[in-house]
Image 1 (cartoon, helix red, strand yellow):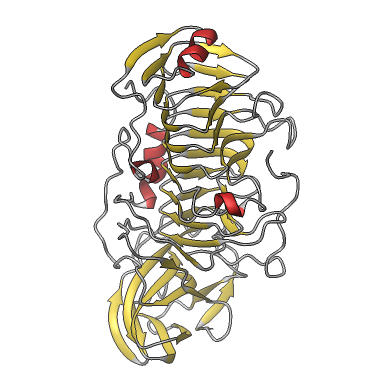
Image 2 (image 1 turned 180 degrees about the vertical axis):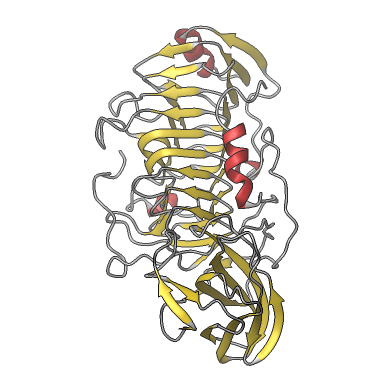
Length: 477
């Protein structure tokens, strides 16, 4: 059973939600390094001083406003920051420039000009991005001043993220292309890797009974599903299987796939929808006590008109499941989309497991749990496109650690936060995300290292690549 879903998340910090770093450049994370959240300094709050006005007329800013400095040379914004030790600091300056002309400004640290920085046009005053810089600082208090060098003045400045040391990417890494949408990366490459039914027979099934029989076989098998089958009980999938839908419409209606106590399973190109809570386990795809799974290029959905508990999850990963990659799927029109860890009381079983990668998925109208995480650390959420999310996107709760990287959030008031319902806060680090008509999210704590190699696509291109390549009908093998 899953935890009750109707409990609303607890208020954190009196209901105020701190917002996360947005960096539009791509980066590659190095294994063996943990990731810590930087310290946030809002432009509207003392000890920051804005040579202009604090405004709030352009949506998407964090806190209560942003610095709209006077349009003049030298009309600056200054932050006073505190460093725990002397060294190289990473500075994340979140800004918006709705013009087509860059607004350069000197970066002045403790009275010395470090460099002249170009704050390029962002397309709209509501489109906020982060410029990532580095500077040498002293232990204790330091002043960080942004001083415009043209009569156009500063871009609008939302906040400064400040971190000494750490592993934030350099200020101008080259853009990177999206990873191939037909290859496996992420956690499913670990623990021995995931090959599904490779090496076994390939069969094509054209009925629910044939699919049920083939999926339950003890032999390795590649099962091609041709047709859409109505059903009311889970299709149980045994180990060493690849389930591959044929075309764009093959799959299940009314019941889901259940991978319990198995390993080495691949599910691709399946369209699964409208699985009611009382139908089998109640999920479109349910993963329970299972390891080494790749869930790729599927379309999972229901509707949002029947209330919170009429349907359960689209993709739920529970009971010490591990080494899972969820990629290039379209999850849409659903209330509780993807749960990692079913209960706060299951630490003895779940701690050290529930390691999942979500990349290049499209969460569209997926009201919450995109995903909601318990215990898994790290859960890696990168290069996903979130559109029109009503409640929240990602939640990191009890002992969870989530790295939210290079995603594109559009019309998402609460992209990510700590704690949910009665579950206490986990940790969450956010890097390289783009926000359009969205909040900025809440971060805190550090997250364990990512052990596998990958290249993150620059977040500004994620919407286009995910819309073009996610869901069914994009692959044939």
